[in-house]
Length: 113
Image (tube, rainbow, N blue to C red; front, side, top):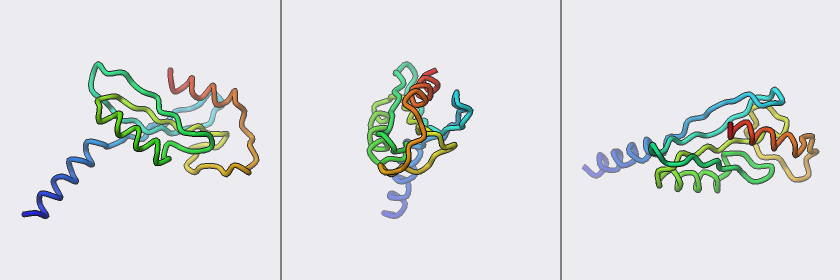
């Protein structure tokens, strides 16, 4: 009986926080990913942007997105490409940076549109 209750709770929790991965072509021509959590109708959408060199998979972004979604908000958490198509990993601080701030700005604008 206890196993059934725990399984049911896990299924309900997993479905409540199910995020959809969406893809969009950036102005630079590079494809990028974002995590999308659909909220309640009539509530605002929140763009949750990761810290410099991180991705939307950063644990702080996941926790904040889940908390906002629990409150009924729609949350979009994109990963800035930093010049890398479908970037999935954070970059080390000492890595050579080939992207420009203007590129980041254009990507944020594309997600907002």
